Image (cartoon, rainbow, N blue to C red; front, side, top):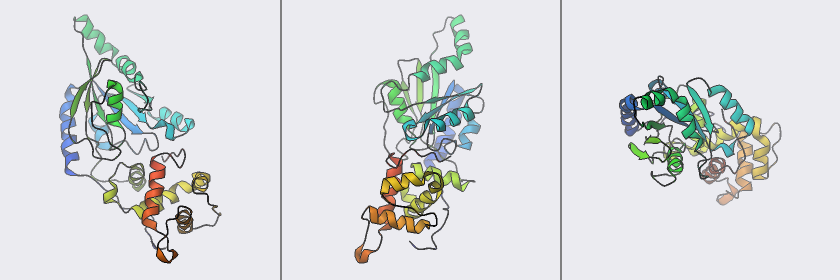
Length: 286
């Protein structure tokens, strides 16, 4: 790494299975009653896929905000104020805790109460069908398993684990269609692309992690300087350059090569992993 490092990244990841997934979703949506739109609390607005939003524009939506323990309460209030409307509601969940998603059942029934009543008037005991969507690695499968109170889908702490659609049944009156995490063909906003890369929605293998960690520090320092100082036991001066701060983190974490040169590769992975696992502190990117 040198002083000529890029200050922003040209980030893109849209493998072929995502194109197929979007086509499948468009087809399935005709028979779907409600969309469970999963968002990462650290970058909820960056997680909103414009392609998915267009497909779901005529459906009731519940925005299921995951990883809420990684941000402050005021950040969640901001998200709720932005996304709550007549046809869309917001729920905050920590899907790793048992029954934390049960509010989704009652909210789904409330949003579709008229349809359920119409079915009941015709003598039909109708079960709602919900499609679970979101960008990769946002926690869709974990939410489904929480709703089902069992491991019905494959989960993993990396993007691209779910590749095809999966129907699963719940005891709470919802039939759930799990879908692969999908991005969109190109990012118009570099900030959105970086945020998605920071939270792990874009495969690390297609990224320059040195640039990504450098930009991460640059982006969060204005608001979260104290968290970086505390996590890495360093002192950041007002006139410190980002590269100097990066070097301090390398030394603090003993990421040093022969000749006392900073090991940026190892340090970059540590910085990103600390953030993704909440060790750096509560950070809201949007």
